[in-house]
Image (tube, rainbow, N blue to C red; front, side, top):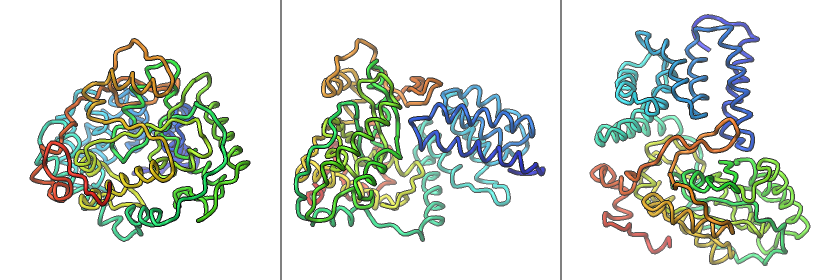
Length: 437
């Protein structure tokens, strides 16, 4: 909290609200519940300290997360009129401004906030927000300059943290002998895993499929697969694999699979299929496939130049890559591709590939094909692409459409992304290094 002192009780309430806000993302099974709790707690805090900008910023973030940016704007507006709005207020405004038709005003405020930062203000997130908005407005040079400034600040803050590049981990696994075939796990067609490298369109595909009444879109269930892997006696840092030369034990597989499906069914009552898009899932596909032999895996693949550029425009914290480095982003994409090929060819994981570019330009046939893969009858509904939000019922809110302007977006930044073009070239189709698949 900032400025005027507040009681310890109000501080505890505010921290509890922030914890609930964080869980909206981390615990997607109960996202709506966490959002409701965050808003209810923040309402109590606002009654106690009605003029606090940090509280207003938190309320606006939650409302935007719920797909209600206009309400969030009303909460922020009094604080935006200040001579120097508080940094988190400006950041929250930058996030919801496009949904309110106020992108130009948000850009002006973000530019002033990064040019004239308040003492002790953290400008890194402001640069990221500014980069995204400038890109929306088509100002590619200014957008890349803002993204570059953001990533330099990120590198300064996180550069000393230990990182083991994904390529090294994949090389270790590639050198292992093929493990013995495991016994059957717990068969169920309920789980659907949408996997892919970061910024590949996983949540967009999830929202496209969620129009089907038999599908529950649960977002990133970040705790679910690590829990399954742990119950198998392994760790996510080892790709969930058993010790060299050993197979998973049948009873353990069935128990882990049954527990996973039970939790999944509780989060998606009545659903025929339930989608999980947690980014970590792709690292443990053999363990998931062994414990859940009836699961479906949909693999989103996007032009790596667009993928890596998109990651550069959004803050990424990872133990497997330094996302602020375009060249390392390219190497990590190649390593991830190699890992997916290894899961298919050496471990027998059935990956159904979906191209992002086709999904964006021809969503209806892509949805129909994906539904058939899931064993479901295609629905006769408009195939509108959206950016998902949580609605009060815990399902996807279809309020923000996704345009196909992100296909080939890298071309607008060609003179800025030399490290990517050195790896993938500048032809219509990217050149994929043969050593990486």
